[in-house]
Image 1 (tube, rainbow, N blue to C red):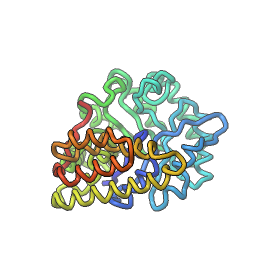
Image 2: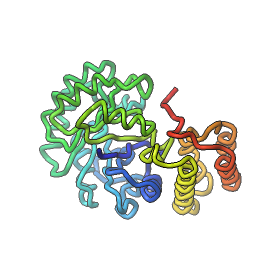
Image 3: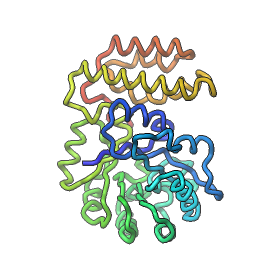
Length: 323
């Protein structure tokens, strides 16, 4: 089984990816939060930094591109190829309202003819590995029958399927029956993505879909970074490795952002991660509030020390998705 780190805007940037890779490893691919291309093909400063090869050493990183324009995708992909990337990913899964309203991400799925035309031009003009991350449709999983016909026309590196429709967002359960049909009928290699929050979830998914070669995890890793070691370590070892990961991530954020952007940006970056990682701790709500309310780095550090000292880690983590 191959394991991939999902792209999560505001979470899995290069600092998180490197800290995770150094502390846990185990990921075969790391997908970047989406890049928004423009008509020049040039990357903005933030996006350029995130995919800079020197910030992604030792990892197989796949830049993800969010667009409904084949021309923009191709220009950006060529820029990335010149930087040394051999694979790029097209985002057809983001359910955000601001993205969907622009006919991008999962919003593009409502226009299958346009998706087909876009993919035709991309595959005709690019000499790179191209993967697609998709949902089942916008409103009805039956929409995927038409979409899969289109996907099967192209020689993709892989098709990453999140078995929800756009209107599900991250609520409701993944539509496993629809995924099974897609898994059986896809002519491209398939990767499963969705609601892998523990080692048990990982085992159940692998058992339910014999022959599945890849699984992508995002929120589960953010909430419980030791997920791939789940069940093989004592609670004390889990807490120790979680603390090591936090400290590595915190120091990296200080090193990258403290001088150029100030402590508030460092705090913001860490608080974003704690929105998920707090679920790893038993009764973590009270110390978690202190982390969220911290206005100075010293306050933050004291709150983090307290939660690691006073709270136990929940075996397998406590996160089970959006309420």
